[in-house]
Amino acid sequence: MKTISIGGLLMFTTMFPGAAQTQADNAFYSHKQSQWLTKKAGHWNVTMTLQPAKDAKPISIKGLEAERLMIGAFDLHETMQPAKGTAMPLFKRISDLDYNFNNARWDYMSIDTRITAGIMFFTNYANEGDSIVSYLLDFPHPGLGPQQTDRGKNVRCRNVIITIDEDHDTVKQYWKLTDGEEWLAVQYDYTRAK
Image (cartoon, rainbow, N blue to C red):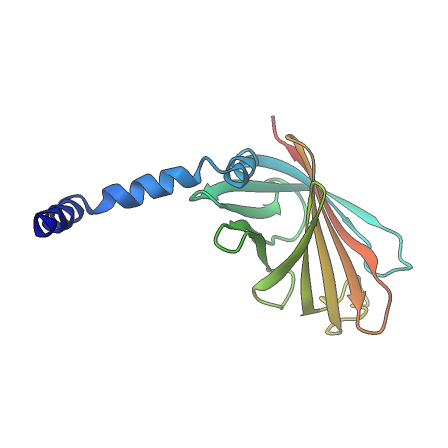
């Protein structure tokens, strides 16, 4: 009888190989992290505020857009670039915010054509209320402004993702040069396009 049961199970998994996997994949979509990420998919208008140095005046840059889409149940993939018709140099910033279900933590990575750092992997240590906080331990300063001040120096980054409401997100990047104090260097304000 045991041999027949095992044989039947093997026959079922051989005849219907995707059935068990599909059922498991579909179950992931019911998790709160998946549902939270899914609500963020869509087209967003972005304003970037840049403060190139701690003592510099912040600069507001409008006319950016971000397209967000889900890859599977736990990954929000984003592509940010200048909106069509804006007079600014073309760039692309790609990021992935992922809930690592196996390790019960948030993973975040980005690649930005304005920075020579390649793929930047952020490490999540703790959440603070409704925000997701992660750290990038080092990347080369891109050198901002006409003088390219601090270009190539090592920068540490504290990245804070804040949900204001379902139509408004903010990402704050606090930078710290190896020998300096932390300051709010970059802020992205997202508003959902209507």
